[in-house]
Image (tube, rainbow, N blue to C red; front, side):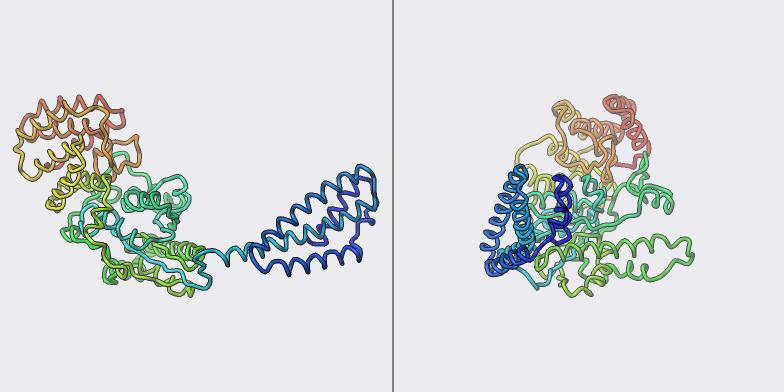
Length: 488
């Protein structure tokens, strides 16, 4: 406590008691008292325990002084008041003195002290949601990798403001489907590190809210449904981004301005956004000195982030591949039911099925693993869909199977995973019809099977029955997506 603070407190008391302000000036005896107690403080705080005891004693003494002061004021004892004000000032000064020393002593004696050690930063570049199509990059494998790293904190690609509302990008399955469940189960700190322009700036630059899909999503392109048509996607490796060649086209694009300056905003946004991502990662690293930080981010951000962070002497960049690939057994052990349903739903119910670009062996193995935990409505529907897509069910046989499912599945049965972000919509980023119950999905698949079997009238009636169960908004989206259906 400074002398100025002590004078202001004395001034306050003088006004309340009518005493002369000059009587409260610090005199020689008070200074001697403060110096004497300060000497005792320096000698006593040689250990954290001593600091803790000293601080507790001083706070207790200050409280007793305050109580005594009130009593003396009531008795109008001027000399007693002056003496106790001096002692109170000294004790409060020493309380402030001991606090930081106590904190430093505690930090030094804490287990696993890492003063002076560099923070290890592991940047795992991902192809967003590609975990759903590649067994070499599966949700269980990613979970097993995170468990192998055992990070003290995980940085995710979302801005802090949105993360605080549990509002994530709809395209980052790796975050919602893998990182968040892992962090919750292991109590691992989450650090959002993304940056995006404000809504008004997005509309100014792009003419749209980048987080808000149109009422009827386009079948492909920007804000359309997710598909991986390239066969190479089925072989995507979890450590693919460790190879600089993976992001080489992005790096080249980022270094070359557009031919027209008025069309250069996407590149400039990418550079600014990635720079701020790196600064937030650095802040996280500095707050976890000597620890391990895992960053899960789009692979195209990785080179620029690493180029910026390698200039920070407090950070050691570690490549994910240096931890080694988790064993298949470890990946299977870390694969949850939600992981399996996500993989199966995306490949069998979403638009990915239309591409034919599916690892059918992996899908069969995943479905068997799901069935091993017991028969379920979603498992039976997914099995029917797999048999239909692989030609094991003829069109008429598919109609019969879906009729049985529609009649037997309880109305309340829901999918373990849907990928739906907006519950008022029918669709998700992964599936035009993602927000249906299992029985409603069986009705939809029945209508589509009827249409494939040449029974158009019955197909229309079945679809009309489903529409009547939906809200007006969902019904409009159903009609739009069924009109624009691709061959099944």
